[in-house]
Image 1 (cartoon, rainbow, N blue to C red):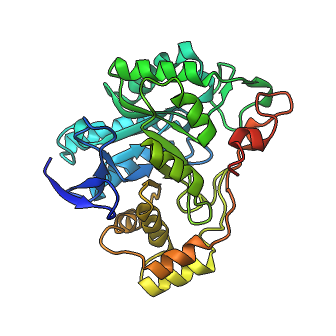
Image 2 (image 1 turned 135 degrees about the vertical axis):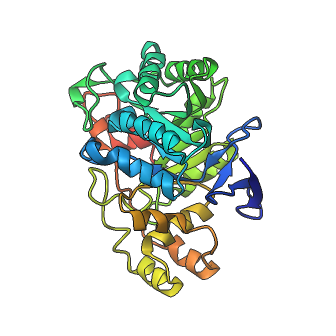
Length: 341
């Protein structure tokens, strides 16, 4: 695929813009020729599987308007419709090959045990009808007893996670060619350090909650120092989900910036995140909003606007108390997040 060089920021990494849909990409390692598109389409919806009957058509529409990076997980129950959408997109000529897409999936907590990691990824690939993933993530730094995939998890099923042995199995997944890259999700700096202490292959990505109301400055600085790309979910606050709130979309500061810019509030949030040097995941099943969310690359926020956003009050939207129990491995939110809350 033809690429046009561009740069995200003066001191940032050199990117490539795919000429057919203009989403910048970033290599995940020195040998990565394709790179990860820095705007991706998320498929998580709560309750999980609520739109399973229409998800395939939604993904086909997203491919049609220009998305090439799709984020799924075993928990979401969207792997199968995503796989079916890829088959149809190829048949319809919307893409020339599977290699034009960047597909991310995640290891759920019930499989976050050394001997269950490779089989879990093999099941994911069967659901997707793919030979490999581009990126496979440890969904949470938590384990539950093998069994159902559900959120909230049953607190009585929480068991200690051996981060290093799980990561060793993730490295085996990459070594077997089942995934091009590996990473984590919802990991604090301290838990990343635990993995890095023994890793032969460092995490390429840490996918976390981030938006103007939860900016994750400490974590972003740590990941930048370690060469780990931050990928973000809940970029608009995820209103209507188990973990979401309306704080972002009801922010008067963000509304004022959007009005002054002649952009939507969502576009301002996505552009802000992009300017922080992260990969942004978005989700809308509305074609017009799908297209609007792509329109964030040919304009910038001013220094004054960025300053105003930097001053917004901070509050984590999803503290994930579901993983905390007086009888479990994490007895407080402080232990789960290592103070980053």
